[in-house]
Length: 96
Image (cartoon, rainbow, N blue to C red; front, top):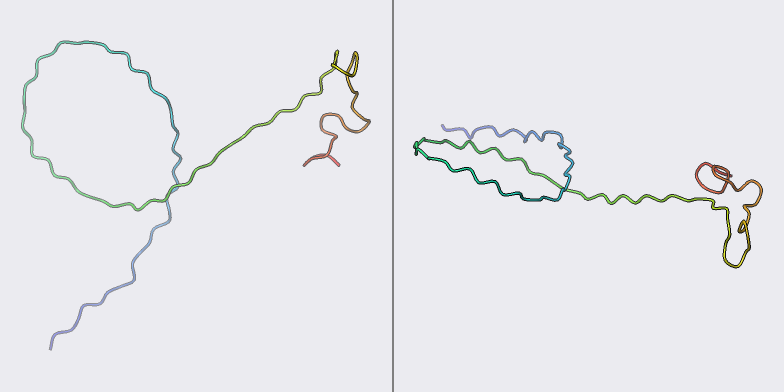
C-alpha cells in the first residue's frame, strides 16, 4: 500500500522592512583605454525568492515665525501677538 506524503503548513518568515532613498545622478565621462582578455566561466545562479511589498511616505515640514517690523496696513511693528500666544504658548500640540 502506498501512502501520500505529509505536507506541513508553510513557514512564513517575518516581513523584512526596507527603506528606499532616491538620489539624482550626474555623469562625468572619463576615458581610460584598455586591453581586454576574454575568460569564459561557468556561472550557476541559485534563485531565492523574496516576495516584497512597498510603501511611500511623504514628509512635509512647516516653520512659523513671529516677525516684528514695518508691516503694510499695520504700521511699524505690525500686529503684536496676544498675551499667551508666543512661541510654544499658542494652540497646538504643546500649547493650551
